[in-house]
Picture 1 (tube, rainbow, N blue to C red):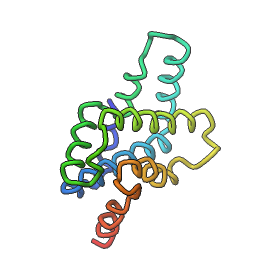
Picture 2 (cartoon, helix red, strand yellow):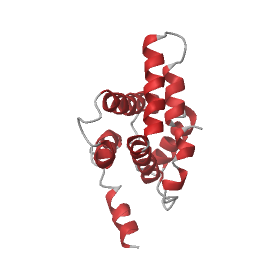
Picture 3 (cartoon, one colour):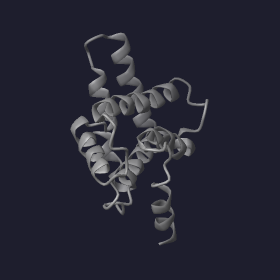
Picture 4 (cartoon, rainbow, N blue to C red):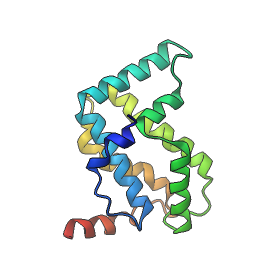
Length: 154
């Protein structure tokens, strides 16, 4: 099954009113799942190796799908974020999707090449927050932090 299905039990689901926070939680959970589950790491290794060494056997798009990057779903979430003014209204969402795909695919691929270079599980929140900074009008993720603190206090 796609990664987005495998991480469902790791999600709090308490961000229905904030699609950006929900997206953040899903990205973090996905990276942490990859870091924690050897079988998922092996699958990612296989997918990337087939993509690199056997042209045409599996596409980068297929890898993204396995990682949970479903283009239309992400586009819809980003549009909801824009409608709620959680992200800049001047963003070109098609370009942002390319950047998000490249960022998270690159994070995973680079970590798989050298898993001891950093703790992907521990650093997942910081990695996700820094990627998401580009979506904010002022380059911050402050709209994510108050909601996260409220959830921890609840």
